[in-house]
Image (cartoon, rainbow, N blue to C red; front, side):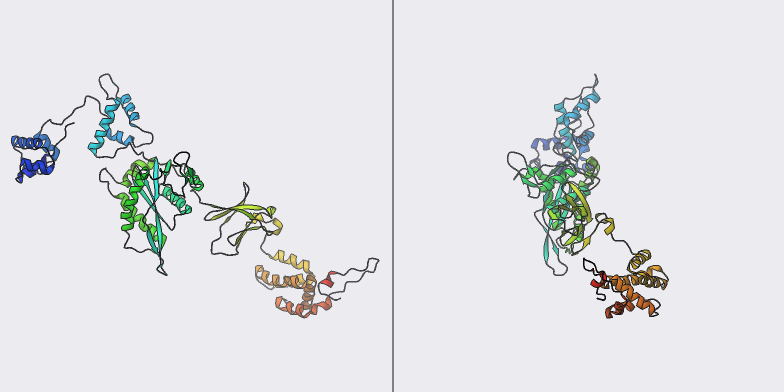
Length: 518
């Protein structure tokens, strides 16, 4: 291939009075090439004024007609399509060459061999100024790392600063970047950042390339199997991905994200250095805007931007996300179920089926749910109470036997209780309900009367109700009955239990132990 010399710069410098020697020295052209341009310009009578507004290729063709033109005897494929197909997973130049031969195989049409095919593609890459597809494949991997430089949050009350760490991810093919801010660099923050990353990409990739940090890699020996953190391995498996950490002290194994970390320091950290943020959500929104501008910045050596290449060529190749995002959980082992059928967690209590009283159970705790397990059997789940609540009880109705479940009071149930206390008590309750317009309005006054039986016994309550009814009180209530019980006026109406004389002695009735007449 004939190297084309730049003719217009030579014509411009010639018009300014520079000699062939000075042009050759200043521009790096050979003296023979500069002399050839001078000679051709004189022959074609073309000076700088005439060539100023003409494209370089047109000026060259006019000065050197036919020079550098190469017509291949081989049928040429659509190199732009070859370049696009090579970005897809599993596509190689070998495969594309075989497809090219199959498509154009004719007796009168020669096809180029594999070696010429590869060299011609590389020439297309150089001439078109596009990035080679040989190294990275679209939708195949994502590189992740923590940013070394940090940012700052300011407490709105005290003004005290606190560090904010940046999680950075990069898709090597499109160089599309993702940044998430966190308050620490522990395992939960590391996993949550990955979940947010996949949601922002709207898909997952088969390979995750991290550094050898402890929250991701437990052991990375020079020889032998890499030992990954269990939680990190489970998260990757949830998104159908494999963790392939870079080699120790080999930053070039994840060069894309290392380069992106440097860019983020300029675009995000330096770009927001004059702003003050008091909440993490506010800071995250500002970071998203800066990263969006960074991704939309046009490439210098290839067409489009990170965003356009990602959306047009890489995003369609990502694996679909699972129906449910990965949930980060913590296990608490060996909690004993108390006698009241509850298990405690952070000073709150959660119900367990009564069949498992005294059993040892395990708790799986997420951000919103607490699950109770006995071995591999899940006994139940609860909505996790907030960290601010203390001594609160969370109860599932299915954990309580039917006879012990709470049911709402209604007039019929209240009358059944009154009937168990006595005829006079039932009469008082009936009068309470008769005195109200809506039956539900009489439930609380009636219950206040009936609860006196727990303190003074049912017999004494029934006797007090009799006294109140005989006192011509139209609708006796708690305020009328309690003074009677406190002063003991009802005791004279409770009949003594007769003593039965036999060889076994005598038996005292319940009235004796309830404080009745003795």
